[in-house]
Length: 383
Length: 154
View 1 (cartoon, each protein chain N blue to C red):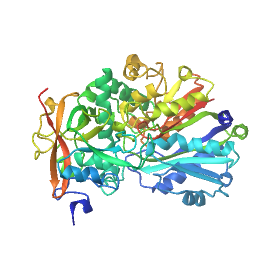
View 2 (view 1 turned 180 degrees about the horizontal axis):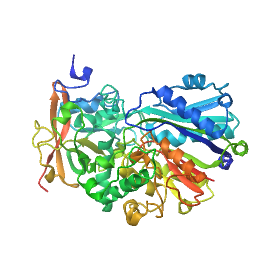
View 3 (view 1 turned 30 degrees about the horizontal axis):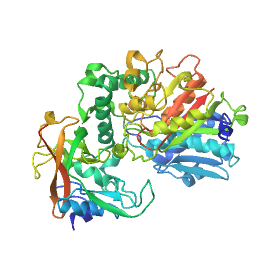
């Protein structure tokens, strides 16, 4: 049954706004700009859009978007929770809806003014209900604090060092320096700069943290059959998965029996079960990188290496161009833009169209993942 | 307005917001007792508290007293930007402690030099994963007591 989704739909258009610490337009305007750019890229008129998917944290709802862009009758709309954990699931929900005949043309999007807006953890009114009552009174306030706790334990158990986190930050920064649209374009990172930067939550420093960005992105999903008539070569949605593991607690997963085995493992088991290929066949990966340690955990979870080997996997340039697994080839959340991981989806599409600014020659398979450490999702794309 | 109603102490520290499931934990804490929710049907401990047992689905609960001994499972040292009351004390420590009586039950807290000392009162160089600790109860503000941890000689 699960095989019904395999290659039945495709991403046929991508669009985005500029990325900056501060953009003057509203989130609603940015959303419409990105969506219309994606539809134009697909060659599909807005009046034919009949499905929408976004994040529960998205402030602009389907009603506003649909009437602004001139969508027709909409027969499927969905919102996915858990912040960056929902990125790939927006595309997955559209793929499921189109495969089962609930809709024909879907738009997924994320628009966020996280650069100029407030930091979410500053809102103390919403941060004390469970599970925050167990953590925040002690000053474990921000996502970076919650992940740093897991990161130190990971270092202790597996001998990982700050150099392994640096390998992730460096690969993303190097790719951003090839991508003129990236916020960190033109700003190379050295090991010395990384090692001497200020702490945010020891053992994590400034460069272990993603950017704060204003911007929006969107993509268009339709059936593989219709995709053949679109402007560009279709990027097939080969396999999709969501993952909420048993006894999972979100970023404060300290109460799980095994806190270092998170949602990536759950999503991966389902993703590979329905795929025609495995991790060894993935030629380029876009892995959610709100914080560098999440990439090490994801490398393990998605099966690129064994448990505890994520740090060692990053050695010898494995994540760089020409390495075993080129990572976040537009710069990722660490160095292109942090828009809850949607830029990773669009970059996956560019790679399989052969038009990334850090193109992996002849890439035909790409893994895209959503946030690790929260209920998550993932996509396997192929050309 | 009480601290629990407004969510912070007078000096801006966040206070726990108990819910139906967690209220007994915090009530026991004000009495200086560390108690963890357990299933009254099958006996399994669980944390954080929740309405029913994930193993046997019983809604019957009991609160089992712990010895208060544990070990540091991990720790972080937050630096600004932070909420103002926390930025003043940064860097301070936040630890996860695994309980000696039930190593899969882990509590977030601060290691302090004394029950009434702040979370920056211990030299971070003394913190080690695996270091033995024992619980003390710190009164954040009137009526709000939270478990904290003292380093024991290893």
